[in-house]
Amino acid sequence: LIGEMIPHLVTNQDNDMLTAMPSLDGVRYVVFGMNNDVTPSPDGYGTHFYQTYWNIVASDVYNSTLAFSSSSKVGCSHH
Image (cartoon, rainbow, N blue to C red; front, side):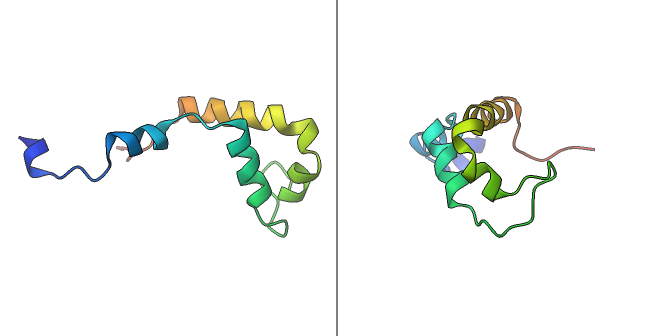
C-alpha cells in the first residue's frame, strides 16, 4: 500500500551507485578536488597535507573511508 501511495524517487540503479563502497580512485578524486585554503580538520591536518603526502597516507585514508562507509547509517536519529 505504501509503495502505491509514495512514489519511488530513486531507482534501484541509482540506489546501488549511492550505496556502493567508494573506490581508491574515487577517494583520491575527492581529496584532490578539495580547496587547499580550508581550515584544518579536527585532526589538525589540512587538505594540503593529504594532497602533498597522498603516496604515504592514501591507504590509511582509504581504509578509514571504507570503515566509515561500512559502519555508518544515514537517516534520522530518534531521541
